[in-house]
Length: 453
Image (cartoon, rainbow, N blue to C red):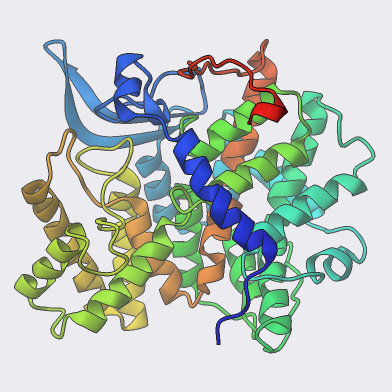
């Protein structure tokens, strides 16, 4: 039986319609005034709003004065991310801490510097006394990003110098947040899993001798166990999600709120609020859900014609969530390829083989190949389309038995490193608050007295 609707529900229904009437702006006015919606032009190119020395993305090359799509490339502090990942794999070592050092301080660490940095991260990776019980365990919910944001803002109460904006103190705060983010996420999930889903409660402390990826799996799993390949692939996923230029929504949010002079906890909470949006950080969840729907509606997932037909149905808004999207395909910046997806795919295949998920990997590979063809047949493409890193990361998390509720928080565990680097860069270079301009298109009206309304 449908619950009786409250007075405020009915009020919102009535006045929501009024808002629609007054707040809708005609699309042609954006063209008339030259306003680039979403700070992007008709071809999807972002409007430059700042300078950065932290990372660089390449998706086009200039040839004879024209922009030509090219294979995507991503650099961290001048180093090609593919070269970084290859070296880590060749030497069979974990790299989260090493790459975090690079992004924060601008240079690759020596063995001594890396050892010191790891020790500092381990020392900083402690929550205040009773914080898990008094904050994380209170009012648990399914949205772990909200739970984490609440915890981040509460941590400001434990910092006597929360408002200190010096580079040294902000760096200290950043390192502390990077260190405790895995606990905020995993403990938040365990609280929800226990109090809301009536499952057993596990609170495992991180081991200072383990990498970030190893500790994530150790804290998440009841028996604390994991294999080397599981931890290594998760480590690569964290590295590839760690930073992606200043133009993405959450990093730009970091810079905007930093430019206002706000404290570190408020800045990172704002970035979290941006990342949790389904248009930003939740894409890999949509991929997993889409693949589940495909298997339910395609009797033979090895039949290319049947899979192709399903992809057409997605674009025609006849399948899954009827949004007209093939999730995990295409990117706001990259054209021919997303370098993160390219380098990640090889590791995904190794994990799939180890997990006995070969058939699933073959299906993902098939869609990786077919989707760009289907999209180009159906729609006008300005810059090419290819699989992005989220297409494969959700598959990896499912193979690691990571619950859907933690997919976006894991993104945050990685991306806080990039946010911290951009906050420091903004603090060192800003001289004005970021204040974009909006053109008013309203008509002036004569004021009407109450008695005449």
